Image (cartoon, rainbow, N blue to C red; front, side):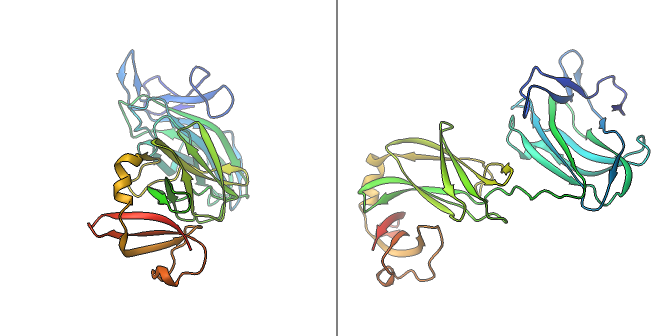
Length: 295
């Protein structure tokens, strides 16, 4: 451990706060209740390791206080264990406070016997960063665990079932996953085929929080982000208030999707073959709605 800022505070082991796996994790402070704001520059250094092309360092990080998430950290390399060069750095502010996230640094450009370090720096007056499950892959780059982007959702009327539900859509990640996990109100998990990019969730009246991850061989992604940058969707199904709206007919069709979430090139509904579709459009009163139809 290197306390480069010389304040007497450094990385340490704890079992008093939740770890990513197991009971223990490493932590470093940017604020101490007994001292106040700190300006850490702390290095958690590995023993000497031999790096080859393609080597990567994987770690999981989290902030402890949901109200003070802006911890800054990175990965550094050194040939002598004293003089380090920071080669990757991140800021936890862009992530969801209190949750664990995986970070991968590509260290294969530094061949030979090297020291690696996880560095906590360039932040102050937050609280604590935690790091767990640090793994060095020597010459074996793990497949990135891509999250599905552009998660969207809306209340949809299902003509066939004469009921309401939530139509969720997202884009395919860079690598097709084995399947998706759809978390509903943090109490229910729905498994969705990896080749799909939409899902219709029939629901009664209520408020529903949706989170979506992609599951690959050996890993589960972060939550999908919405176009607004949130990692969840809050959808309110209120049939009494939306019933009158969905009773209106669509007079101008703007988009048609099949059950796999793929947009159909033609929006001429009458020309569609038999199947189930989500039709989006504008009503006579200028309202934009979506309906699930069966042809």
